[in-house]
Image (cartoon, rainbow, N blue to C red; front, side):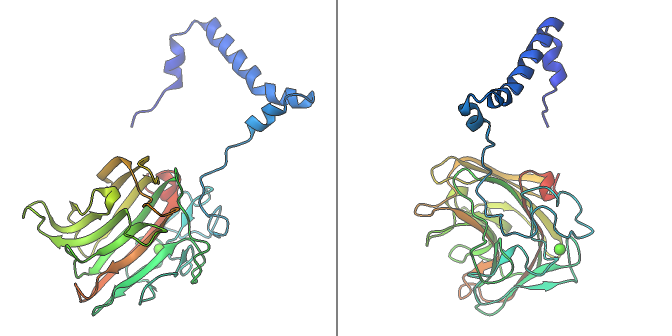
Length: 306
Ligand SMILES: [Ca+2]
């Protein structure tokens, strides 16, 4: 990673100039306080106000700023703005609004962090078993975490394929989506497909992209069953082409696009859905995944992926 070394930038300057610059900087730093004390310069006070943080609905999330942490998941929990949805306290930091036919449950036989993971299982022609990020585990969507224009975050999760009926063109099989508040398809989604590709050779069985913001259905990587895969998504939401995303799989850069729209037309904001979303009548059969180590935060370290 490229880092800027402050010593390097100062090295070429004469010592008096460095001292002079430091003096000016110090006086600028103290200026607003002095002006306030003298009863002048209200404009300085207004300018000095901290900028509001990104608009995510963290207010009611119990895990923000110091939740009980699983032993194996020890970094970053105390950092402000980190949401830990790793299934250690039931469905804490999730809600079940719009979950589909099957309520996800908890399992402790296969976990990525702590003692529990989330289990999402469908059979027959069942369509959906999903959770929305944000909330206290009940059916209210009020505490869903919302991503408005310019919201930039890191979202990490791990998934484990226990059994899978894979999707194909005409049959969605999404495990994660940035869903808009419109009625249409998400502009960002990750799905499990088994498809040879339109040209018969550019596809495969594994992880595929989905949605307008990702340039449609594209094969991203094979993913083996019966092992954990760690995903990190760095994204900035935008309704008008000012967004970006970067997807890492097991620590390797998988996909990146700049200048993309991730909030669909007609939507006010995005939210995160995770689990299984498929067209069950097109691809009937058993499908079961586990999710764990789900975290939303402002940087890689905060989501435990540094
Ligand atoms: Ca866990």
